[in-house]
Image (cartoon, rainbow, N blue to C red; front, side):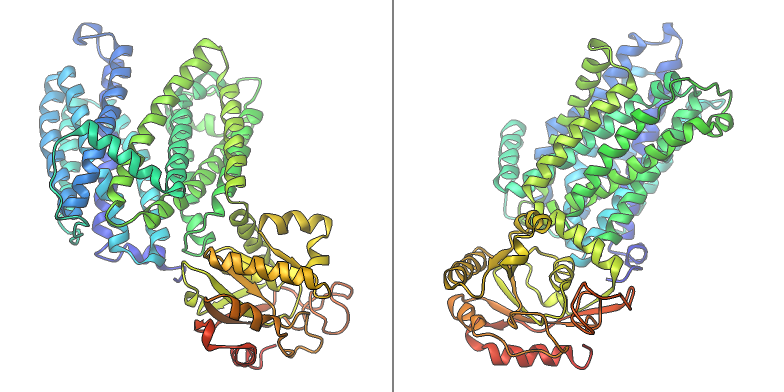
Amino acid sequence: MSPKSQSSLLTKRRFLPYFLTQALGAFNDNVYKNILLIFIAYASVHTLPLNADLLINLAAGLFILPFFLFSASAGILADIYDKAKIMRMVKLAEVIIMSCAAIAFIYQSYLSLLFLLFLMGTQSAFFGPAKYALLPQHLKKSELVSGNALVETGTFLAILLGTIIAGVIANSDNGRYIAAISVIIFAILGYLASLAIPAAPPSQPHLKFHWRPWQQTRHTMKIAQQDKIIFQCILGISWFWFLGACYLTQFPNFARTNLGGQASSVSFLLTLFSIGIAIGSMLCDRLSQHRVDPGIVPIGCFGISFFGLGLYVMTPDVIPVSNSIITFIAQPSLWPVFISLLLLGVAGGIFIVPLYTLMQQRAKEDQRAQIIAANNIWNAVFMVMSAIAAIVCLSLLQLSIPQFFLLLAGLNGLVLVYIYFQAPDFFWRFVVWIVTHTMYRVRHKNLNNLPQRGGTLLVCNHVSYMDALLLAGACPRPIRFLMDKDIYNLPVINAFCRACKAIPVDANDRKSVRTAFAQVATYLENGDIVCVFPEGHLTQDGEIAPFMRGIDLIIKRSNVQVIPVALQGLWGSYFSREGGHALLKCPTRFWSKVTIVAGNCVPSEETNSQLLRQQVMTLRGDLR
C-alpha cells in the first residue's frame, strides 16, 4: 500500500461517506453536550431545577449510562441487519432528537435537555458497533490500519472542533437560538452523509432479535473473553479512554491553578492533545507500513508514561501570570508543558490504532459487532473508574493535579510492563524494523506470499549478520530463527534472542542439532514462521553456497508451506565478509539499498534442498 493510501481513502465512496458520518456524529455530540454544560454552569440559580454542580455530574452520567444499557443489544442488531441501514436509522433518530433539543434550548428546559442528552448517548451506543464492524467489510486488509487511523484522527478533531464551537455558540448573543439551529443543521448533515454509505450486509441475518438487555449484555461480555488477544485489545482500548478521561477532565483546573491560564487556555490545551492524537494515529499507520503491527503498541505505551511524567516534571513551580491566550502561549516556562502534552497525544494515537485494528481483524465476522459492543461497555466502565480515581486522588488523598498526572504515568508504566511480557517478540521486531530501516533503504517484493496464519518455513540466503534482523523487521508475523549457539549466548544478544524465541544450534554437536530440529518442528506445528539459513554460514564470496542436508530433514519432518526468500544488496556491507572479516573493517557504504524478495509457497512434500537453492538463486538474480 502506497504512502498516499491514507488520503486516497477519503476519495473512495466506500469510505468517505462513512468517515463524514462518524465525524459529524462525534462533532454534534460534543457541540450539544458542551453547550448544555456551559449553559448550566452560567445559568441563573432560579432557572435551574437542581444545583449546577449536581446537574453537570448528572449530565456526564446520563450520557454514559446508555452504553451500559444498550451496547450489547446494539451489537446483536448490527450482526442481524445491514450496518449501513442501522447507521442511517441512528442518524435519522439524531435529527429527531436534535429537533426536540432545539425547542428545549429556546425554552431553557434543562430537564428536557438532560433527557435528550440521555437519548443522544443511546443513539451513540447503537451507532458504535455498526460503525467499527462496518470497516472490515468495506476496506481491504491492507487498508484497515489506514482506515482506523483516519477514523481516530477524524474523531478527535471532531471532538476538538465541537468543543470549541460549543464555547463560541454558548458565549455569543442569542446563544440558545444559535444552538437550536446549529444542532439541527449538523444532525441533518450527518444523516445526508449516511445516505451515501454503501450496503454492509449482515453476518447473521437468520437470527431473531429479542429485547433482553441483561442477558444480551452477559452473553456479549462472554463472547469478548473467548479470545484472549481480543480481550486484551479491549482492555487496552479501555485503558486509553481511562487515561484520556483523566487528563481531559483535569485540563480546566490544571490550566487555571498550575499554568495561570484563562478559560480560553483550556481550549488550547485540548487542541494540543487532540492534534497530538491525530498526528499519532497517522504516524502509526506510516510506521507500521499500513499493516497490523502489535509491536508498535508498547512504543506508544512507553510514550504515554514518558510524556505523562514530562507533564509533572515540566509544570512550573512559580505560576506565570497570563491576561490573554496570546500571553499564555507566549510564556517560555510553559512551552515544555505544551510540548509534553502534544507528544502525550501523539503517543496515545500510536497506542490506540493498532488495538482497534487488531480487534476488528481478529474477531469472527459473525461476532465482530458484538465484540465491539463489549468494547464499548468496557470503555464506559473505565471512564466511570476515571471519575472515581480523580475523586479519590484529588479530593480524598489531596494530591495536586501534577501529582495525579505522575500517578497516571506510573500506573501506565505497569501496563507497559504487562504488555511487554505478553508479547515481547512483537515489541523487539518493531524495534528491529526501526533500526534496519534507519541503516538501509529496504524494499520488499511479494511479501504478501507469506500466509497470515499457519506454520511456514522460510529458506533464505545468508549474506551478513543483519540478515535475520532485516527479515524480522519485514515480516508482518514474528519469525523464529535457527541460529548459531555461540552468537545466541552472547551477553547482550541473548536477552533479545530469548525474547524472540530464537532456536540455538551447535552444528558440531549432534544432540544440539536434534534438539534444535525438534524445536523447529514444534514451532511449525504450533503455526509459527521459522526461518532457516541452509548454507550454515555467511557467504565468503557473495555467491550462494550449497545447502546443508539439515534443511531436507526439517522439510521431511514437518508438513508445512515452504517459501524461498532472497536478500539482495547486502554483499559489500559492513556486516558481510566482502573485503575482510565482518565488523572488523571500515564501513564503505551508508544507507544502501536492500531488497527482500519472497517466492511462492511450495508444499514441503514437493521440494528439497536443491530445488530450494535454485529458487533462491533465481530470486536473488545478479544483485548480490
